[in-house]
Image 1 (cartoon, one colour):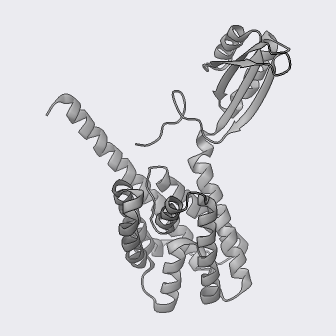
Image 2 (cartoon, one colour; image 1 turned 90 degrees about the horizontal axis):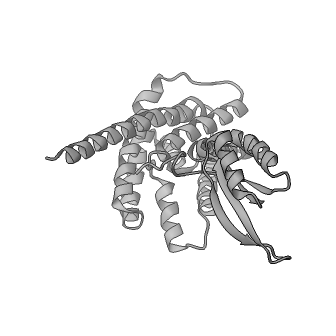
Length: 294
């Protein structure tokens, strides 16, 4: 075995170890949200976790084991569409999360206070847990498999709309079986909204930034000023004024949110008449920014 092959093998082992660590931590957060807050307050949950909770309420069957039973057949069917590699990663995360729910969460303290606080904590903990798992290119299965499969068959439908319909149906069913009142439905929707927001913040918020387009007659000087101010490179684009037909120099630069003010000041100093457009970027990837997990 060559040195390069040994290095690649070592890198793969490290990646798998990090994946497992993220699964354990993420699973602990999900388990805490489910056991300590949602289950204790009789909240209906979204996804297969919600279905597993319904079955647990009706039969007493362990939630974690039920999650595995529900996920594996759906995952096997969906693996033809979403890919075997993604399914295998998800199988690992699914198993770890299920074990955390069944065998670790009973040791967590149970919250018995205000229900709104319980709903918020459920959404935050679940969102953090799922976000950590998703950030490693995996999932806990369940409705993720169904959503991606439907999206493949119905590409004109958005993933958000598909997921919302599925979650809304599960929460509605859980409301009538678990809590049996409209308040439970409202709490379930609050949990779903908070969890999805936290997941987005974890997946995209940490690498979010801003992008600016600067129309200027001093493109070289502006790019140099940006480099000196925030140590960021820039890209030159060529444009044309629609009214005058004159050629325009455009400087494009992506940066962190805190750096944009420094860029604005640097541009003003070089060219006070420069035209700047500043936009929010949900995620910035590439050299100097976040890299995707392979």
